[in-house]
Length: 295
Image 1: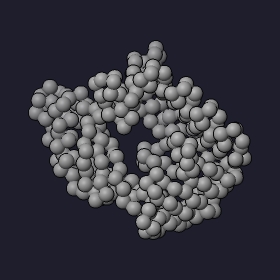
Image 2: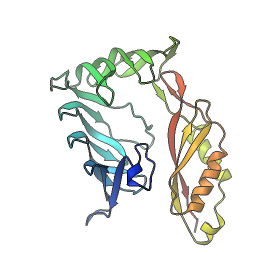
Image 3: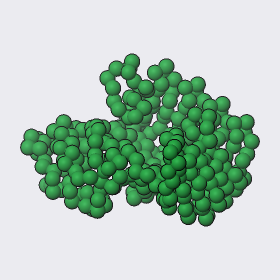
């Protein structure tokens, strides 16, 4: 596997190796383990589906050194309850709490509470979610965002810098973003009231479903052989809403189904692009297309 989720055929070109094994006795959940190319364990959990995985129960991620990186509980592939993240030295970095996930939750959830935040020596920055929070990028070399927390929720003035050289200031009231202002590397400023807006088909999910129903033609051979399955397609939603860079993640058990799914998605009209800090951005997106025959 590559870090972007692509499958590769050679270990030499892989970033890590994923092994999915049969469920243990008394459960329907598959065992999933991922390994660094060095052979050290990278991730372990349970999944209800093989590809793409849908995690359920506890999942533990490790650094290449073997130290824990993250321990979380999943339901339907989404975080449910406590999520603990660690510095490379093994010290707790952050403890976050997520409410039970819903099917309508966006990919990037914002309904969490940050209950603990420590520096790399173990010093507590928060007490029960109250205090001044400092969040780092994945490598812990640069501050990503900082500001006050009250009961685990953002409150008051916040500031930060994104990897794409966007700097921002925001004002919150008990977790609700009241206003934000972001400047790019040229100094151009944009105001916003939502940090992240996911890309979407014009008209919403119902309109997208109607588009699929009107355009999908069940492949003849698949219908004749009673082939059914769910195809997962990944693509990019460009800044102007075009869909590009299509990739089949799971063919639903049939290349015919996958090719039909690709054909239809490539016909899609432009989407509403993703918005990040008030600016259109390129977003990677995955959709499942279910092929089922009626009795």
